[in-house]
Each structure stands twice: as structure tokens, then as C-alpha cells.
Amino acid sequence: MSSEESRPDSPFRHASTSRDQAPQFVLPLVVHIEKAEPPARTDALETAARAVLTMLGDERSLDDGEWAQAMRDWQDARIRKVVRRARGAEWRKASTLPGITVTGEAAEVRVFPPVPLDGWPKELAKLQVSGTDLEDPEPPAAPARTAPVLWLSPQLDMSAGKAMAQAGHGAQLAWWELTEADRKAWREAGFPLSVRTAAAADWPKLAVSGLPVVRDAGFTEIAPGSCTVVADHPSLRG
Image (cartoon, rainbow, N blue to C red; front, side, top):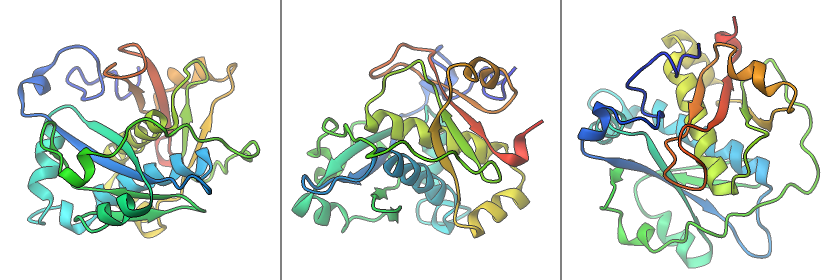
């Protein structure tokens, strides 16, 4: 049984839980997409996952930090993440709000402290969720197994924005499962990770491997309970 499935009150399960009774928050992520030079899909997914981890490990999110209460409120309810896109002046305005910009090879993703589900800042509320259909110019190389790999389901067709949110979920589940020493080492290394789509033949075994598994709540795009990501961190392998 996966670590996610073993928690009846998991924020990633589609069944109704006590988390649904808490005030609901969302973690906003904005990806910078210019028409002429959009980032590669895998680069955007990996950058989004690292953005989530960066927010989780930032000193402002911990203890008495300025974002700590919002982070606690968010994690006490459903763990929702929404990815929106911005370009030009939209991106520049979004970048003035409190948050953290994380860069990949070419991708830029800005993550913001959680906000109430119906209380988005106006600079972010007007940004589009659609239009994040990114592509890889060539198939990504095989991942280094010495670093974490977030395996996406080969059975699901997700937009890049949806996949970015799911990769963020997988990274967060791995973060929760790690010891403080392993978290510190991952953070100090700059959160190295890969996001790849699993081979169809490997997916059934991965899904029952005991590694953290994300099962989507089904708010958008895919059916409730769909297994979207397996978080394969070296420290969590059996």
C-alpha cells in the first residue's frame, strides 16, 4: 500500500474527508509563457515541482515566518494548486507580488503563498488557466536515478498546467515523507529532480511500490481517484 493510500485523510484523495470542512486555500503558480519562446514541457514541469519545494522549505513558510500561517491553513485543507500563465506586462505585474520565482533551463515559475479559494489577488485572478499546452522539442533523456524522479502516469492525457500541478503534488508528498536530514540535504542541493512519463509496462509496479502516490481529487480534467504521479525519491525506496 502506498504512503498516500495509507492515510485516510490524505489531501489528495477524492473521497470526502475532514479536510473538506476546513477553509479551503490554493497555492498559486504562474508560469511565464511568451508566444515566441515558450519553455519546453518537461522543463516547466520540473521547475513547477521545484517551486513547490522551494516554498515548502523557505524560512518564511516555517515556524513564525510571514507565510507560515497561510501555509498551515492550506495544508490543513485540501492541497490545491492552480497553474496560470502570464506573459509580458502580466508576468511583470505578477512578479511584484510576494512570492518566489524559480527558474529551470528556460522555464520560469513564480509560486505565491496560499490564498483563499475565492480570494485571489486581482493581478493573478485575471490570468488564464488555459493555454499551457507546452511541448518538448525532443524526448527528454533518461533520468538520473541518483536524484528523485516524479513519474507521471502513462495512462492519462493532461495539459501541461495540470501536469505541473500534479508534479508539485508528487514533490510535496515526497517532502512530507522525508526525514529532516533528507529534507535539508535536498534543499541545500537545490532540489534536483526529474519529471518523466513512466513506461506503460513499469507503471503498475510503480503504483504499488510503496512510494508516495498522488490520486487526484478530480476537480479538473481527469476522473476522481486517478493515480497521476509516483514520487520516486532515493531515500524512500524500499
